[in-house]
Image 1 (cartoon, rainbow, N blue to C red):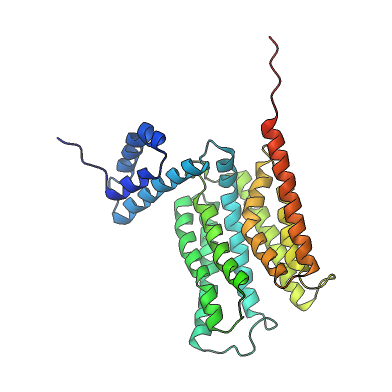
Image 2: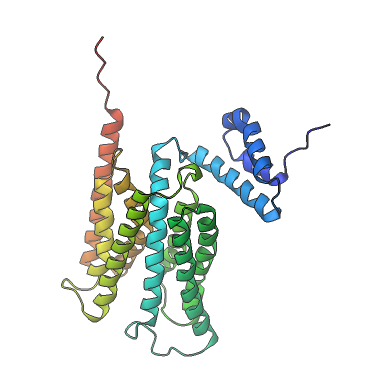
Length: 311
């Protein structure tokens, strides 16, 4: 009996692997796919093919589980979900705040759609965070996708609702941030994801940190902090810079926190730069200096030669 050729989706997924890896492990990946999809429907087969494709992209980009970047990303993925969950809840509170809301807010269709969209996003992220807490990463990744699509719908709905007149930079960030957040979760090596007591402690701590930072920023609307506008968003950048400085080859938790905070830190940096303010200039300098420090330290660590062992 002739062997049935692999499905088209799997063939395309295998092509994303490096040629040498595909030659060596192609048959193994095909067998694993066949076993996983034996009783699966079309959606199940598509999901498995996407997992194979993601594995190939991780091999090409150095984000596989045997690389430091892959291990950092695996630890960052649950923290990214935690930060996104806190941010989505804060977005709803920000939208409902009378000091921020457009005075012409009405029950028109764009306004109602915007409120419904903003209300659904945290529900998906809360469900994803619950799945991550339980170690159900397939469900968590499936929930991240609709959360991202709804988050991307924010920009046109905000414009239709006349909520703000977005500058190009702010509009671009409203697209880049959710896509980056989604990518950080989906790109993590699947074999390193799970649920453990240290991971749950890290999730709880990151959620509390994000909630505290958002609380300060929301409170700043009614009780401005010393230093003028832009100080509260800069706190995100400061925490990101500290985590970046503390990160290193043997400090994966700090590196994971820096990666998880990257989307929001990027968003806040753009906010404090538009319009330009002293806080914005300081935020950019802090990020540049901390990034340069981390890069120099990584190069020194990489170039360090281990001493020869005694004969």
